[in-house]
Image (cartoon, rainbow, N blue to C red):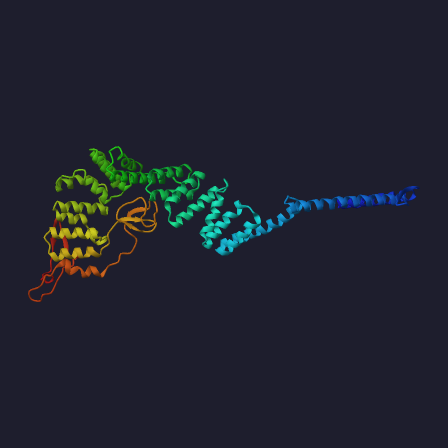
Length: 494
């Protein structure tokens, strides 16, 4: 309110001063005489002031027109002027609008539209650091890999965009299947940005595929250093890499010094079954069976596994079957109720020809978790106890269509592997193999029943010539105290 009043008072004061000045000039005698081409002009005081103001205005307009003329000449000459800046702002506005439209088209998956808008933005903006990446991504979406590669290569010339260019070309090489070039590019990208987690994982995966275990361990150390990998996971994966390196060394009949890699792998991750088995074999080769026993017991306590049992058996390869049963007992007592413990004990007892104890060792395993291994052991027990051939062949027939039991399964794609490997042979994932029962459903084939006569042979009745096979069921077997007896139905055998 006060400010408005003050502005009104100032305006009135200025008008009053102008009016007063005009009155004074009108009352002032004399003036200015101007002679032009023999003609004399006499101006009064007020007219003189007005003429002076007009002259000043014309002079200002003249200099402005002269500046405009000079700016036009400089603009035509290619120099930067206010006029060129005006047109540049217009191009920049249209360029940013085209860039925005290109990004929106990328977001909705319209590759061709995004590429057209990106090319328009590139033409208007003339800023490769800003538009080349959008052009490359739009070209990739549109399927124009050549144009995308050219855009990524242009990004390599600028230090600020070099990482983006290297990463883009790396991904293109991966999609083309050129893993060797992609690995080299990933190494360069990681050198530019060591903390980039995606590049770290890509390089680690490629190095594992190429069996560059030393380089993979360096990359893994970088992940730990940059905080993209927990220390516990680092220890596990470092052990996997050390184990992979030691397996390669042992395959080449390495010296005992080189075999220390296997022992190091077990030290890094004692519960890693392949590392424990390989380290135990290294100690056996060095004549240190006690160290091998210690390693195998620790690993067995974490997870019983057939490879551990095989390595434990290699400690004393020439012992008798009875001595081996006795030597295995401290190992088997670590996990007495585990399925693998029962299977290994049954195998040892079968070799020692103690078939009733082998049957008791299996317990309810053939009913609770019947797999090919357990059913085959039951067939061996039946054979060892002198059971009828039809009963033995019945167990073998069941084993044909039974699940295979625990195996090395990739947790990423559920692919089953015959043996452990650091990377999945199906999806190339690193450190994803786990010893477990496959989650894929087991399909029973009709060929199992078709092969039954081939396994059983022909046992023809002299009267009817019919083929009869005893189906092994739990009802056929009963345990009475410590004595194992069999009740056979006479009508079931011919």
